[in-house]
Image (cartoon, rainbow, N blue to C red; front, top):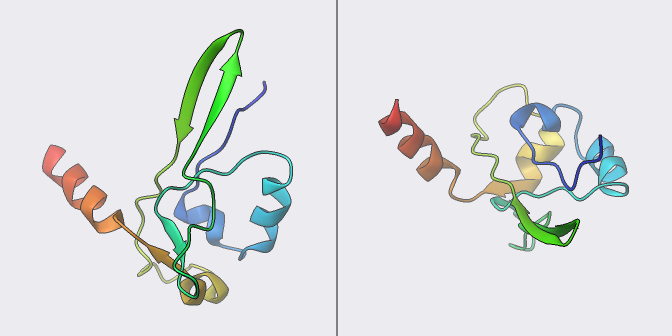
Length: 96
């Protein structure tokens, strides 16, 4: 199966950035809410548009996790800022 892009979850950050850098060379990672603390810029694309047999499809990703998780790689905790994750989590909680 061919994938147009992949989104991320907190488990994808267990081992730091190196595995993600390798993956991102072969497929687009989309994460609209992950930003660099150092630069304030997004670390990954917020969306991609793929063409499937003449039909354009937009793909986006939102992680929605918290940096408070104790098992995140220290490199990740110190380098990223999750913007809007709290909003999504609160909204999801309201829907339950």
